[in-house]
Amino acid sequence: MPDVDFVSLTAYAKQFSGLTPEYEGLLQEIGPQVKPLLMEVTESFYGVLQSIDKTKPFIDGKVESLKKTHLHWMETMFTGPYDEKYTAWMYKVGDVHVKVRLPVEFMAGGITIIGNTLHPIIAGLCGTDHGRCVKLASAINAMLGFSLMVMQESYQASSLAAELEKFLAITGMSRTLFDNLARAYK
Amino acid sequence: MPDVDFVSLTAYAKQFSGLTPEYEGLLQEIGPQVKPLLMEVTESFYGVLQSIDKTKPFIDGKVESLKKTHLHWMETMFTGPYDEKYTAWMYKVGDVHVKVRLPVEFMAGGITIIGNTLHPIIAGLCGTDHGRCVKLASAINAMLGFSLMVMQESYQASSLAAELEKFLAITGMSRTLFDNLARAYK
Image (spheres, each protein chain N blue to C red):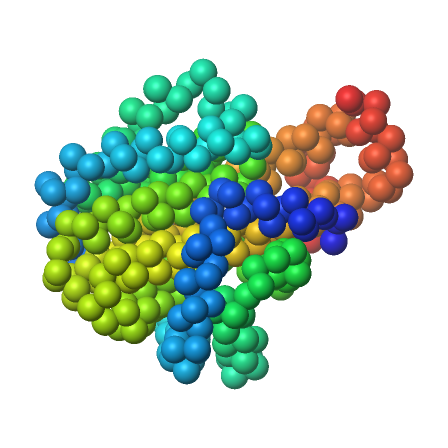
């Protein structure tokens, strides 16, 4: 993986996705109530992926072990801290997605499935406190968007790097020659 | 742009993002109430982009014209139909993002800003009908996720195609020679 400044990336992705300290606090505050219900999100996630022809082959035979990692991720979303370590983890996830050749749209699709299931769960916990429910909907939206942005940045970097490797393998060109030509081209 | 089966892509992205006929109906039903408020979403969208160092240069001097297209898109989200024409439009948007060299994470970030603003607006319109508000939150989440998935699929296809063009330009290799080598490599 390239040398990434995760402190800057965290600040940038938070500003973009609107993950404010207030939203982080709300997610942590509702954490103890929501955590016992998060298995429902994980089950729904893999349930949808198992129902789609294009996604099913990627998870067949691995669902039980994937669920553990997924549940841990869901719990972290309601624990924090939402710092450079969390960002580095999400960055790694994007890179791994390229390595196991997951199509790019799986990340946005997966985040959407999680949101679809989390919104009603959180709303159920808010009861009649309409104002808190609305703020939590935006907090979840911001948190999921923050995570997705970071994953996709590394997915893009890794897939372009993989594309260069493919080009070099096909043409039989050395990396040194290519780098020299690239310098001359500029 | 490549030859894409937009009917299949629509069905696939809807299944993945959970954009069901029920959710589509809810979005269309609340359309007349929400449309007069959508300028708020567009204003907030470009307000955030103007406040971030990395995004600002991409929109400077073009904000007023971009707002018109953005508002039209927002209105379409609450009008429908959510068919292959809409999918083809989102696919084109992903391709244009590559052509104007927007970083990949701008799409996920942008969709997140829209969600952050739409959730409270919709909640305000639902009043005390908590059940409808919760369903609409998932409907918005699904609609935004559906749009993002399609955009990103074309962004990825276009950025890999642009990467190949770059390799060919740097190495001075013809497309025919590369294609022949690629066939031999397989």
